[in-house]
Length: 249
Length: 146
View (cartoon, each protein chain N blue to C red):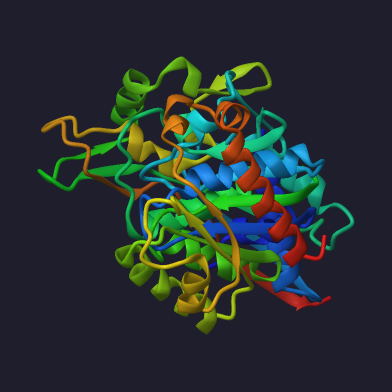
C-alpha cells in the first residue's frame, strides 16, 4: 500500500546541495577512477563530498577509497565512513568479493534501502558512480532526485564507445536531465576524433580530457593515483574546475 | 536502532497521505529478514506520533516470514537455514557496529542477503528472495475527519 522508506528519501538528501552522476552507458571507459578522483579533488578544494558507488555488479570503491574499519549504524541508519576526507558508500564494503547476482525488482528495492538507510551529513556534493548501461541505477536515481542532479558523461574516443554513449545522451536529452558535459578518457589512445569533434558528435560541451597513464594501474587507491601521477591530477583539476564553472560555483 | 528511522518514515508517510483525516489503526508489514526489534519500533512510533495527530492511532506490526528459492534446482528454505548460511559466509569486517553490537549488514540492507546465500542443496548462488524483505504500510483504517 505505502512504502515508508520513500518518505524518508527526500528528507535524507535535504542537506545535499548537488548530486553529480558520472555515467557512460559503456563499460570500461574509466568512470570509477574519474568519479573517485573528482570526489577527492572536490574535497581537497574544501567541499563536503560523498562518493556513492552504485555499480552493484562490479563495485570498486572499497579499493579506491579504503576505510579500514567496520561501518557504524545508529538511530539514523548507517553512517558513511570517511576515506581521505570523502564520505563513501558501496556495497563492496559489505560484500567483499562475493558474487551478487541481483536483478529486476530486487535492484530497485536495494536502491531504496540504500538511500533510505544511509545517514547523510551536510554535503556540497554527492558524487554517484553509475554502472554501465541505462538501468535502474540511472533511471531510478534521476526520477528520485531530479531537482538536484547533474550528469557528467564519460567516454573514450573509440567509435564503439561513442555509439553507445550517444544513446545515453539521447536519453538524457529526452528526460531533460541537466548535463554538465563530456569527459574524454584515454584521449591519447584513440585519435580518430578530436575532443572538439567528440563534443560536436555528442552535442555536449567537453569538460576535459584525461590521458591514458599506464602507471595509474600500479596504485590501488585514488589518493595514490592522484599523488603519484601529476599529469592525471592536473587534468582532473581542470575537469573539476569545469564542473564548478557549469554549476556557477 | 534504525527502527527509529523506519518509524519516522511511517509517521511521515501517514501524515502526508492522510492529511486532516483521523487514522484509527495502521497495519505495518515487516519482513523477518529486516530483523527489526518490534518493541523498539513500537516505542519509536509512539514517541514520534506525539503532537502529530497520530497520538491515538493503533499500530499493528505484522512480521512476514522469509523464504528463499534456488533458481537452479527449485529448493526452498527459510530464515533459520538462511542465517546458518549467512553466518558461514560473513566475514568479521563485513559486520556493522550498532551500539557496540555486531550486526550483519542485511539487518540494514536486506537485499544484500543475495550475496550471502547459496542453495543448501545444489550450492548454486542464483537465488531469489520469495518473501521476508517487506516494509510497507499494508492497511489503514480511517475514522471521521478530525
